[in-house]
Image (tube, rainbow, N blue to C red; front, side, top):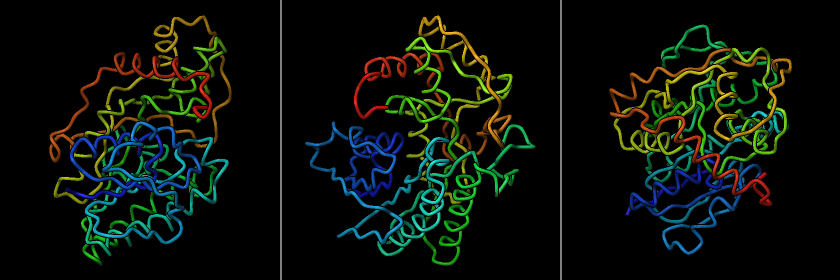
Length: 316
């Protein structure tokens, strides 16, 4: 039975990855400081004998007894609200946390998979974004704490692969949505859905002409799992190439929720990317992966989850 460690295991993506690994027959150790994670995302696993939770800050040495076959490093504040409020912690988990997680993988002879991000491309000058593109990132802007933490994490991951021969993988995750997202985490899907369900004005930044591409969480996790099993070490984009403007997306959310919310415009945040669309040619070729869930089907499931948890404590 493979044994997997998932840092950030109580987060949105980490908890869904934990579910997939258990389904694939793994034993899973979820490691999380609960800085931005939520233990309620793992409540359904309390009686699962192949699962255990370790509350720990990965910026400190990670001690796990016994063998480990995979280390999935998903620990990090990931939403704009989080990393703007927690800039130092974001930088530390991307640097010290990645170092410690790689050290665990090296010590155990385990495969290491880094959850990186499309934010490595910054406000891209190339569209759609291919893995070979080096990006257009402002290292000293407010978003730089997240962007550069992930870029550093990628560099350290490749260094461990080249120097220590660790079997490493890097996934660059594009906008993802689905159940277990926090309503107030600053990302566009929970922001729009929460505002629409409450009947509040839906906030669009700028003119809403900036674009995003949205991938349902089960599709994303499938791509990540496939990458963990592949003999490939360069970064791989995982995301849905379907591109919408933010204004189009707001209108779609309003229609699917049946909301009467108005749409209001506010100034663009600093360094907000104007375009975001993955080129998934590499994922198709190397992993045989592409998204399957239609946007409206995924949004309906997500909206239903938010409706059920709108007033639930701990889900904010």
